[in-house]
Image (cartoon, rainbow, N blue to C red):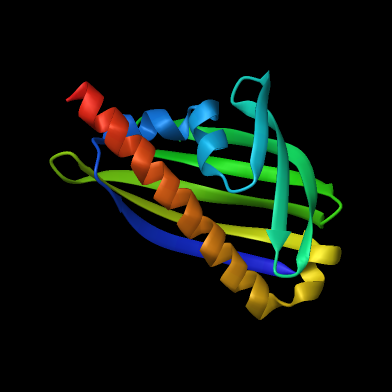
Length: 154
């Protein structure tokens, strides 16, 4: 099943702080819902372990996440591939950062993925809603980290 995502987020922190957090595996581990660990396996590549619940289906997911096409501090691509008891997924997303106003960063993203197995059985409409919810949780935690970092470095 194909799943497309896109969005536009305002982060109340300088662009350098947002860029730094997007490249920090500890920050990403704290923000990605269900993420248990990210382990460096190569430059800008990590092994990922997650425990997720999607609708009435829960289980584990192990995979790899990589950052590419990095243009600091304005753009990068993130790729993800893996599988587990929930099924399998492969996708990528592009991120663009711009200064919206002093100490505020606009982060836009657009991505696509292929999802199969048990998790795909919940249906595309439900899966899109779950994806939107998980993205919302990610940015809620990301904003907290960005605000703390932005305050410390100000």
